Image 1 (cartoon, one colour):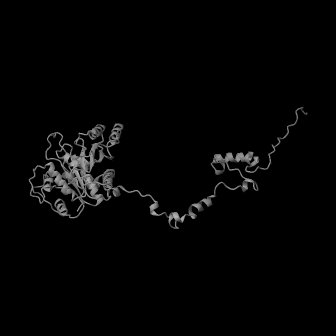
Image 2 (spheres, one colour; image 1 turned 135 degrees about the vertical axis):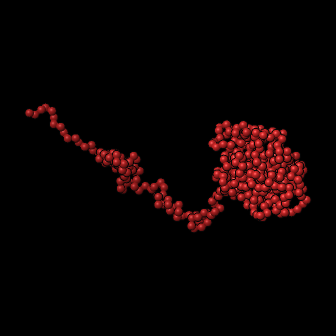
Image 3 (cartoon, rainbow, N blue to C red; image 1 turned 120 degrees about the vertical axis):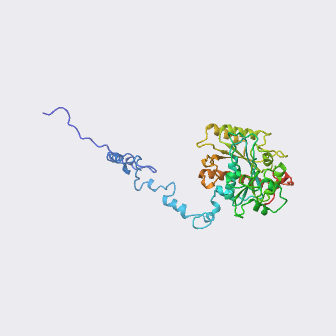
Length: 425
């Protein structure tokens, strides 16, 4: 029985537009994917194939259209490769092999190269601190060993530690002298050098150095007092072991040593009687401080105080440059308070160098310092300190050489005539 409902008609396909593409564009048929293309894209996205990736496929450009003949905005990949490697400017590179000359490549000097920079004349570096028990003596020994190895020449260290301290605490004795820290006998003292009447610089180096290794670059130490293992009958001893050294004798001894060694380190403890005299004759001062907020603030206060002996002022009101070596007393990073105190201290010095904690440098070990046994970070930090010292001295030498109309007094170093710049013989 036929119903009144009309028979269902089959769905008619929606006609697709076939208008030709305009210049610079694509046709609507190419822009709108068909149902089969959409299903293929979804299937490809599920399987992770390149055809169905997240990025839409680049629509095809019909052949013969204006877009197919449009020039590209940039060169092709092959053209770019040819431009980068095939068409080189020989005037810039200097040859036809694509290799730049060495003067076009910036080179970075290593710390060893910076520490071995040539220095004219002789220089004195005073090492001190604002308080005792800061590790200044150990730093002098390691700095001397590092500079000796980096520069390939002997470095002299003068130890102004007295035999006895007037206010030494029996429960907290002072550390070992410099000779014990580096394992040297210390037969020749400051008094022995001061009592010498003339003599060549080579003879003075032979007197102080090791006779078994002549000409070998080594760290050599001249103490204020003779060591316990040394006797007054040593080859260089000309005075009794307990002979008193006056400030004038110290200036005379430093004058002799300056003519024999290019670098003279002076360990000047803050409470030693002769430390002010040594610091006034120094070209550069290294101040040692522990990495604690209270110690750093105390060091900064001592540097700000004009009456403090830490930074002597000469007749012209000039102060020597200052490098601060901050030694960490324990492992770990600095606290925020320590970093803030170090930032305040940096305002009063020329350079600040951080020295990490090293258990092998503990004075309670009673063992001489051996550089190869230290950690790599510790050796690098002391080499950084040596490079900072040498670079600052190079700057001082350049400033002295460029002075116009300098008098003999202006050309001297420090505040005394004994610091006259003399070449090392």
